[in-house]
Image 1: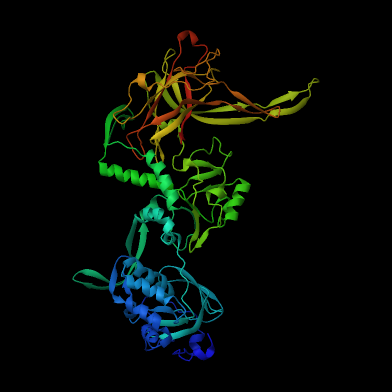
Image 2: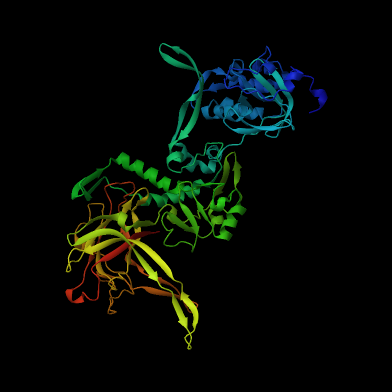
Length: 634
């Protein structure tokens, strides 16, 4: 703007003393820095300045909101004509999108009007007095809770030039801007700015509430025994982002990365995830537990739902399974390396690092998952593809990766269920005495010698392996112990309606140097009842290479035998010894009913030692159960 066009600016210069004073900020909303006090209010100064007439027009037609849904009876012209101390940066005519905002107001739609208020008016004002002086910069909290940099040396607010600073007012300070400060949405707001994100936005925002902040609000007089509030401060809360994703997407002081599936991706996924949540109206189950004195006891549990409750459960769980693990802390990933660009993500692929969602799901590159980190972990072929393989859109509190194709593993919405046996144990039969324990296998270190008896190399280093087990001990020398395990564990290990491969991990009994021979039974719900008879619950051995100790095939029968230790050889050297055997009990096992979120309804696995008395020297009666695993099948 040319200097000769600035004659219209009505200036109220502050004194030289005031210019030497740093920015004044009072704790009380009604305190005014005396160095900038004048007789006219901020509104009157705006009203008296002809080249601020467009902004003045907006202020006169937008009513001050107490909440996003509720307005007050005063306009922003009234508000800025009051006693509360404010600093306002007003854009001059022709240097902000006046017609656009007038059009929003003309719609009469509440959301459109609030958009004008939040993105234009509140984005260009803040509480207290802020004088432009010195050569420093400060970060301000704007009236809409956004953060903005006020640069004294450049005379800018968020990069927007201040063409006339420090117009003194009785209730604060007015600055004139060569255009409105740009509004930058946070991740929470950004979801609503793109029509292609309507599905995920609608789901997340359905949990939104407006809360009253009593601490930040200014209390007025008590009328008829009731406290009144001169200045009511509110904030938006969302129980979903707080309790499920564990990410505060509406906070300006956060820094997140979020994968955002488009409506098409969301719709296609929802067709899949709904199938995992087929509930029935009534579940009946015998629950085995103990009294306070430690005695075994049982009770019949009945869990029932109305159709409305079932519909609500399916809606929540199917959408949550898509949405819950899409958010990441942008700054605190592996070795505190940020993930604020697609190059950062590609670097993670190159290093074979891991990522963890805010809801505590770990993503690991394929081939790096092992026995110690398989719980609550999923494997990913390519992180860059998972994030859409393109740079994100920057928001005020993070980065949005919009994806048009779902490249996340299916185990994100249908997770592997990995249960430690001791935690899954429910009760034992009369021939079993159960206990929790661990066993340490020691590899003494095998050394190869040449013909002259000189050591050549170490085949395997001296090492120790410790495993935890549920020990199924025989109650007598002739007993065959059996134990029941419930296939469920909070907070997120529930069997869904769908297909699984079922595995049990059995440790080799090195004390007796014998494998185990056992049967497996699975009891679970159908649409019309529950499988409870052993004849219907018996699992058939699906393993083509399954054999007993004599080498006879067990495939298709109802008997399972674990293998003895296996020696892992690589490059003609012994690398490791495996003492646990992961045995597949069933393939493509279909559960017609979901158990997600249910406490007293779950499938039950029963393992029972089984062999003839003349085979007692071949098999151990005592079974060491390490874990039970269910792998979902798409």
